[in-house]
Amino acid sequence: MSERLVVGVLYPGDFNDDFEGHLAELAAIDPRIEIVAEPYVEPSELRSQRGVPPYDNARGLAPPLTPEQREAFARIECCLTLDLPFDVVEAAPRLRWVQALGAGVAHLASAGLAEAGIRLTNASGANAASIAEFVFARILGEFKQVRRLEANQRQRKWLPVYGEEIAGRTIGLIGFGPINQAVARRARAFDLRVIVLRRSAAGSELADEVVGPGGLHDMLGRCDIVVAAVPESPETHELLDAAAFAAMRDGSMFVNVGRGSLVHEPALAGALGSGRLRAAAIDVAAVEPLPADSPLWDAPNLYISAHCSTAPSGFFEVVHRVFADNLGRYLAGEPLLNEVALS
Image 1 (tube, rainbow, N blue to C red):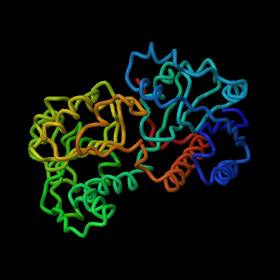
Image 2 (cartoon, helix red, strand yellow):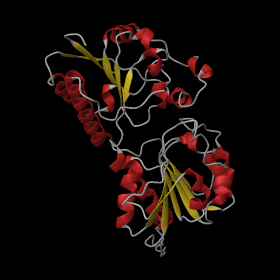
Image 3 (cartoon, rainbow, N blue to C red):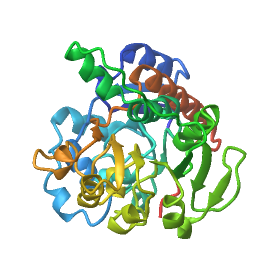
Image 4 (cartoon, rainbow, N blue to C red):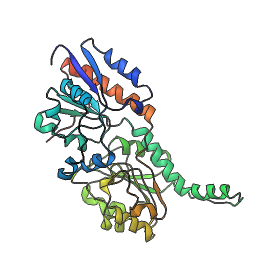
């Protein structure tokens, strides 16, 4: 590392209500730090296509760099960012470390980080609490019949609508990173039985039962509610397909707050249309924004939100805390938090 550390903050400032304050905090960590704030953001459609190889079609959608972006990329040694251009080392030959704005990093890995020897860290857990709260908002909204209650209110009808208890039911968690760990803690408070599916079948005090990937269909058949929060990878691509939805318990509810590529969307629409599922809630889609002609828009009892289950104010506070900690570690030559192994 040179005497001066040029740090790029590459997400738009209007994402963060305290953007200038957070930049000042980063600059105050060490006098060697120089902050370069220059946003680089790709369309949502491109970001979703960059999650799983091959990337041939996606490359043609990448926006050209502006002169300001080229100047910034040419100088930075590390950065905090949502997106990166393909073959980033060509634009940023000095880049040595990337701090992802979120937990998902598949689209950033496609920038050629491993090939260039560039390190990558993520912000895993930064939005876990707010997303877990959102999950239960959707679950309770369905089981307590909030849509029907609101419809009666709009129509000025005083009609009782009785919801159902979720206490004593079984919730299955696909993936057990920080988000679903936060879901599990809240599930305990609602007296739900918790079954976790994870790569390793190692037990957890947050779960009543833990199963490995081979137990997916069996777990689905035993759960009243299933919550998915897994990263994007070739192994998880359309893992929830027609066979998986057929394995789910009749009248169960499905929630996805991880990655849209996990779900074969026509199969989800079919499971809702057949009545196999009582409801589903998705905050993510395979292609974002969700196309207007997607069958999901017309699927019965589907709750759709536009990848907004987190709470930005708390999220950026935590992300910048993680980045600031890692900047100190980087300057001191110490191990970085949340480093992602790139192959």
